[in-house]
Length: 127
Image 1 (cartoon, rainbow, N blue to C red):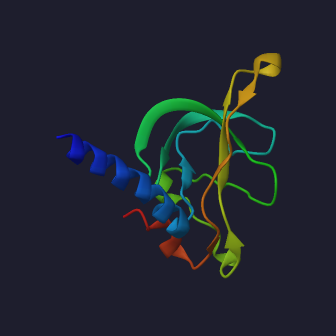
Image 2 (image 1 turned 120 degrees about the vertical axis):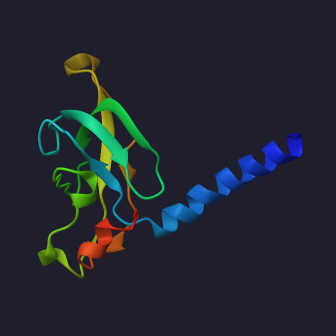
Image 3 (image 1 turned 45 degrees about the vertical axis):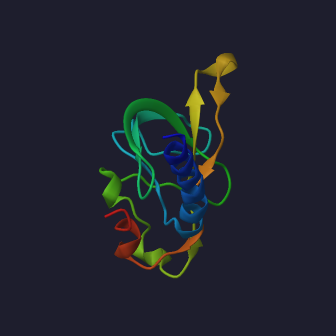
C-alpha cells in the first residue's frame, strides 16, 4: 500500500514539469467584474485550462506588469489571442490579490509557457 501511494506521489511530481514545457496560454478568468489591467483589481471566479484543475472559488486578480496582456472573453474556452497576433510569441500571466489598500496582499505571478500564436487552435488545447 505504501509503495502504491509513493509511486502516485512521484508521478504527480513528474507531471507539472512536463506540463510546464508544453503549456499553451492557460490562464483564463470567467465571470470577472472587468477586463484585467495592470494595477486594477477585478474579482471573479476562475478556472485553469489545460492540465490545471477547475475551481469555482472566488478570487481577486490583477494583470501582471510587463508586456503580457490578458483579454477575457466570456467563457474560458473563448479566451484566445487576436488573429492579428499570429506568429507572435506571447504568454498569459495573472496573480491573486487579497484585500485592499494597506491590507492588500498579492500572491505569486503565474504564467503560461511562451507560445507562438497560431490561430484558434491555441484555445482548444484543453479539449
